[in-house]
Length: 468
Ligand code: GDG
Image (cartoon, rainbow, N blue to C red; front, side, top):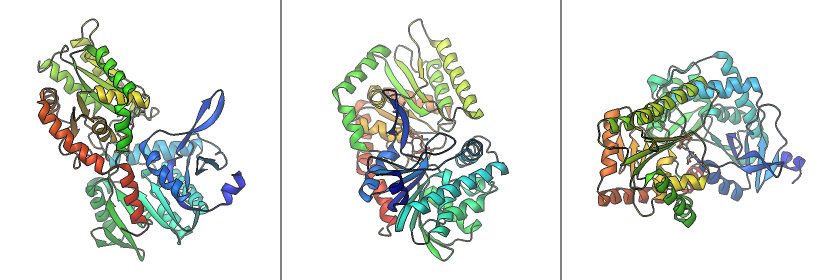
């Protein structure tokens, strides 16, 4: 389809997210677009393809945007973001104001008026692009904290369309949210949607309260009235493509790779695994400390057990992330220095993004999976680990403060700030009777299998169409 035709066409279903579902890469020296890895893209792709839809988003590179293009059956509508805007909008309001504020303010959020100007301008640009892309009476699904103002702006431009908004991260309680200088604008912007979705009931509840208090919304439960319209507010917990994880985990090459990993890490040693973006919300530092505690209290020895932490580089330009990296690397160095022997490292720290099959092999190799964020919208790693344990083996240690905790209550739930309890939980996980571990894993697998990412997307779409 020619660029002109893509630009002038109107699409019945439009997703609006900070980034496009494709990214630039090189193939035989030629620059091409490839589908970005990740659950959101694979969940939304079939829905957009079925609906003949479009995706409005940023390419990931500052400056001019390329012309709209087709990739597979999806129309990609790039939105430009300039270099200064990127600092104010993305590195500023998104990652230094809203991200820390929404995650229990575990780092001090910063509020700068010049950042907000960029946040608003970028949101307007996304809303304008969506308004030009969606067909009369069509559906628009807006994603995440980068784009809180899009529903409100779009509503003014296109009163004929149905708008949904889903927040992937926690929505904070009143004590925190009310610090935000732009709290009214964020609430009113979000209330431009017909359906506002959160990961948990707590998030939905916080929003409902705050919308009544600071944005003149009225109503109760999941139905609010705002500006003469009805807004449905509810929890839609996100999930994973269970079958995909399970089938890759069963693949002989992946199982062989898992065996090799076990051999390389030392046969007979039990493996504790952590997999996270290198983010200060994920609890990596206390987790590493707790492993040191496990060794220093002689609950386990380095001959019995090894800890592997995969940390995917993230937001590396931001100071708090650089500090976190240094402190985690220092802790790993201290533990390896104190407890290691020549040829035997207690902690293996991999700061990189692993290829998908390798990640699954890691999940398969791990006896105990540690998912201990201080605060997390959902946490897909926990669900992915469960999906790969087709033989019902393995132990999941999960933070009480992950959005996944209510669904995965058969995990070993822990307070991620409590070093002693974490060390004890690791010890308990490593020594749990196989029949008890199996019972728990079986129960968790039932939950994840029954509610996949496809169910998540379908149930949100059903509400958006006004049918549920
Ligand atoms: C936000 C919310 C919410 C990790 N390491 C590798 C790798 N990963 C993949 C995992 C998983 C994804 O990255 C991480 O997802 P999470 O849910 O754990 O966390 P966030 O990135 O913070 O996501 C979160 C999510 O949005 C969805 O709504 O659950 O609460 O914060 O899929 O597998 N993938 C590969 N190699 C790695 O080394 N290939």
